Length: 221
Image (cartoon, rainbow, N blue to C red; front, side, top):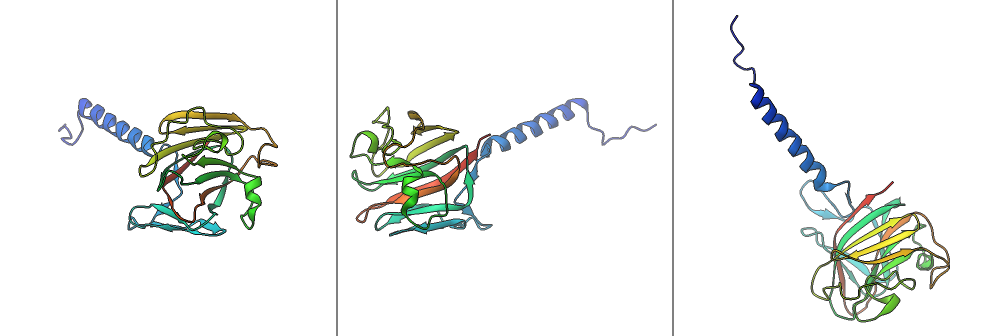
């Protein structure tokens, strides 16, 4: 009987399987379970779908780069599509001046229609020119960062990795673990806390801006 010339030799089959497994592993590790909160359409343009703003000021989005910029007074730009309970939130931010003030709110418990979120959700602070519980990397009004030197300062992109797991918050700044805090309430401005909620980015200053990009989140068990 004539042999089928299209049958693969064993060594070729093994190589093919190895290539497939390597490609599959690369695909999985590339996103690693993260969801991008600043989305892109089929043309690669970024959009603000799923985001809302409350309060004074506003955010603009560069459709080509995905960079968000906050302006003119204190407000909250929050992702309204879903509440998150246990998660890792990663993003890059850049301040304009040493005195720039901003922050990331986690577990905002309700739709944001008034200022109550300030007293019900913890804020990871951005403010290089102050110290203690209001310094960059602090859980605002609650726990100061253990390392106050991790920020690169204004005009450079900094990377936050914020982990919320049950009653523990961890903050990493530029690949340094700078804060670990087990939640206690009431403390500072927080009168009560909730186990899940929305993610929010703060615009704070009237005379300068803070930028954000590459906002992504991975849910944890």
